[in-house]
Image (cartoon, rainbow, N blue to C red; front, side):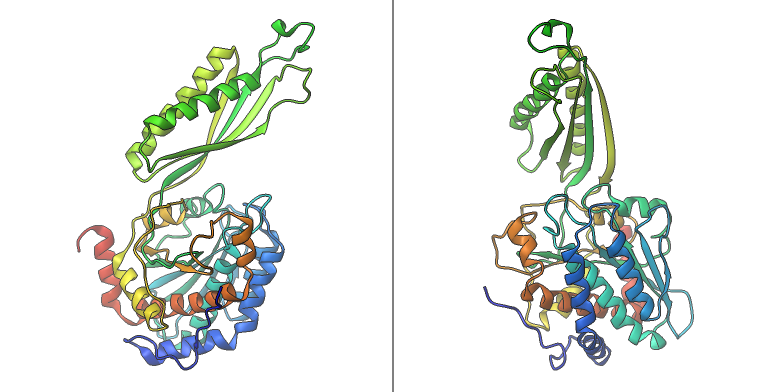
Length: 405
């Protein structure tokens, strides 16, 4: 595999505002060690959703060193971060959101590359801070916990932390580069069946088997898939299935996810899944608790912002590709229905490496990923600068968002 190296110092950025974009790239390069070091440190200390204590502290400390007024925690999440830096040209607008993710996958670590996402967001904020005296409005950095479970950005939206933003920008590492993001609506579903214990050999008829109910639910899901559209998804794991082979399990627990690229179909799937849980409980004489948590939306992609990111990216020799068919989910979808948003992907490895895998996890800390982290920081900063410098671009993004364009 080749290592992508991007000459941030001598490559001519895309117009408009090429001189300012060149200075932003130089600022990223000047802070290379700090940005890459942050990515490597977060990768080496993976923390799952809502538990990103070290990562959020490191992110907060870094942006504070570069002049941001930092709130940590902010809102209702202990590991959420907000940094604010006013431009020197006065006025409250635009307010451009630079986002970062830093949670890891349980048992796997950074198999989605959120270490790179955190460091690139911080890098973009650092670069913009160097030009803050000549900017209007405000740079708003948001460190967003719990993307992998719980939809932390949805919670931050309810906390009002995305109010009054004019755009939200966040890059994602991938095996393929593509600026247009498409997402599946998704939700975490926690299922607990309750039965009654009994001796599995001497008097099993006195028990009610919660594990049987869970197995019946998995079987029902397997049959259900035949009638689902090819782009819908339902999948889950067993989290608890009993304590001993000679005890009828009185409790069984699972974690499922239901997904669809269409919001209306997702709601139908959600209702059908609950009915299947209730049917499994009825069939086995058990009771069931079904808890829906989080909730990620589909993507309201903003092509106005997309075109500017593509132009900035292509100046460094990186080509955009059509949207991929193998979709995932992200709470960036929630953000995209609140404010003009893009969530571009840039390849940190060769095509065909699956996300949420050991191989992708290891590549997220490899030299190529470090170079892409620096490039992504540069591109996010350059796109944000265009929004600060061109009020017409902000208005065009909002017109498209509202459906007026």
